[in-house]
Image (cartoon, rainbow, N blue to C red; front, side, top):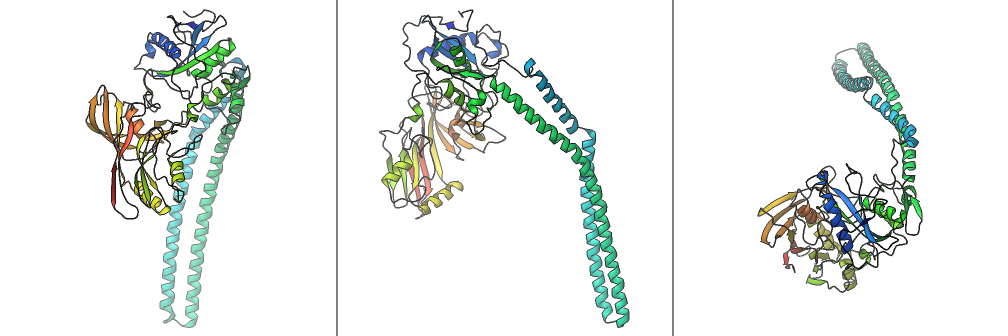
Length: 551
């Protein structure tokens, strides 16, 4: 039962058999500790009792933090990201880091000013006078252009007729009569030019007057928006200053200070309201020692990102990474596994070699190109083994966790020709994958546009507005033990395309086995590039390669 004075909750069952981990969870890439899993399951039993949080309803990220109090009792804290409809649900969630809102007394006056400005902007932007002026200006501009073109056509016709008259009269009239005719024709030309000038002056005056009338309103709107931006930024800074985050060294930083050194400077919306910062803040404030942490998704997946009910996920990148980098100082945290070279001791097998290109069989957990922290990669291995090779070498890439066939160009000419084949989509690729679940249909197509999830890099999400077209066809090979073996044919080459198309609810809705980004961890990611066919860039001979997966 929760302690009535705090949010510290004892485990419902005896935990004497569990050893406390020596190091705290690295929150951005982890396997949940057994104690954290036990705490999560206890919280999930409570969540089951809340009808608004049933699996079919909109989901949310929850978190648990295993802690130890001064009496050496081990329990846990619970939190959720963002807001919860019913906070009086019988679950003792830790409070928000800052409870101050725009409507609080301290900010009500400035908030009222901003709201008044919003109302003024809305009134001006939707005023009848503004709409009428815009319509009149648009109509005047169109009419002016039409009349201008018509007058110019009249003048052109007049010039042709006068030229014809001069040519015909030059042989028929006397010299004096011909000069009189030329004078008469010249006067007609002057009249037409004056008519054109008068037309331009009339419409330019009319359009300038309408533009001036319009500018009075649009300038006022622009001024109000600038004032609103200044006031909002000031208010935002005051709000961000209320988010005071502790760390294990008892150092305090607010959101302004935490994000000041980052390129964007301004914290993203919702910063500080995720589960992990709430949990650590409460632990530090109440002298509770953090032991282990885990965050899991509860409920239905959102439309864009991939979330599986009850699956564990790392803390988010854009909002939590800067905050937790401060909050974890002073804790003995697990080493970042992303800094460990996963290719150490692995052999890069060369399947084919000639003077222009190579085809290699890349092992799983092996970078195609150097990463931010790890240089060892296909690129570096080939560069070392073939020092005479020129050009970028890498023609295409495979995800670090994906194994299979990869082509390498040994000179610039071959690289350019092979890249052209990729652009023209004449290169044939086939993957084999094992997905978690029984796919009902025997074949099909997934067409979901993808874009980088900036809040949760490097994960991708489905976005019909900004996403790049992504198309995959698939074919079932075998169904066994609640898994399905598939052949996958990517028609485009987006990052994580096959992984997202398999895992997303609008795709196959079954993540690839071992997909730590979109599913659950296993011995490896069960995705392998097994077939590759292309035209040799120099000999023009068609080449085909196939290497079976080792799963």
